[in-house]
Image (tube, rainbow, N blue to C red; front, side, top):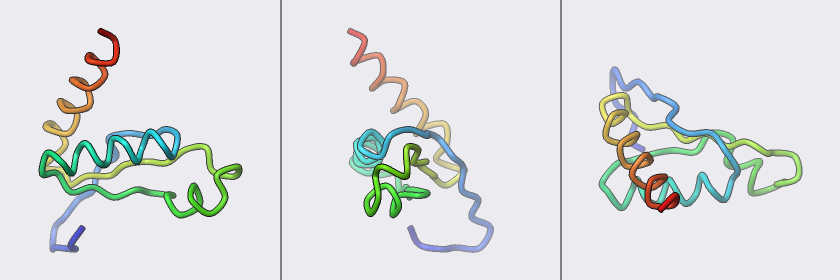
Length: 77
């Protein structure tokens, strides 16, 4: 994600490293840039890191949450 002035990152998800990677890919396939927080530890030592957070630009928060909700609804069906 390119650093820009006045960019505020907002956490939209926290969970297992593999689930975070899946959601990150889903967001990016929908044109939303995202970053993983604590993702390196999850890769280097997955037994130490149980939680990875996904951060998106504040302006993308609502759309990101909608995409995650739709995914969750598809999983429940």
